[in-house]
Image 1 (cartoon, rainbow, N blue to C red):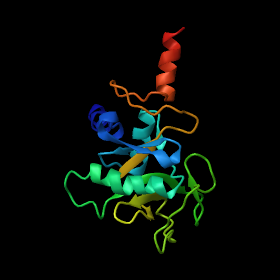
Image 2 (image 1 turned 180 degrees about the vertical axis):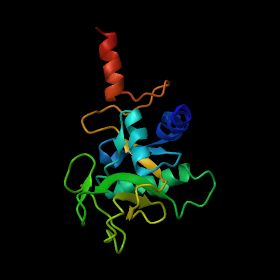
Image 3 (image 1 turned 90 degrees about the horizontal axis):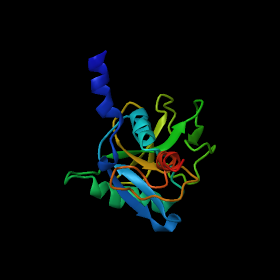
Image 4 (image 1 turned 120 degrees about the vertical axis):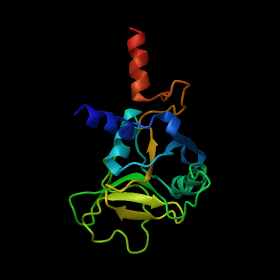
Length: 181
């Protein structure tokens, strides 16, 4: 059991040093944090959550472009990123072709499926954006891809501090409130 726990910890929490910060001025100052490491969909969710973030909900074309152009280049480590994908906050809900963003909307505000997607492979419940196309694909959730996070809706400050916590995040705010009591 102890060995199992030791192996799982590094997989789940990447830490902010393992993210690239991407600013999207066209989206009211939204900032996306793109991982430099690969995780499964649920490990990616946990890594975002460990920093009080959530998998990104793309609101427009510019946000997807920021991930697939600037972001994929920054994390490429001089390797070919054409076939790489990035997990985003969309999943197949209750089977069929019903997809939902993780922030609770029935459908994401912005959708850019690749031709032939979403397909009818109901085992492919998670969604990624491909670096070379910028289009969305359904995927098996246990595949390992890079992932993109954002501060949950309702928090307005998006700057990383020196100690790897996000300014304005729920975690940082709780610490500040506790210190002020």
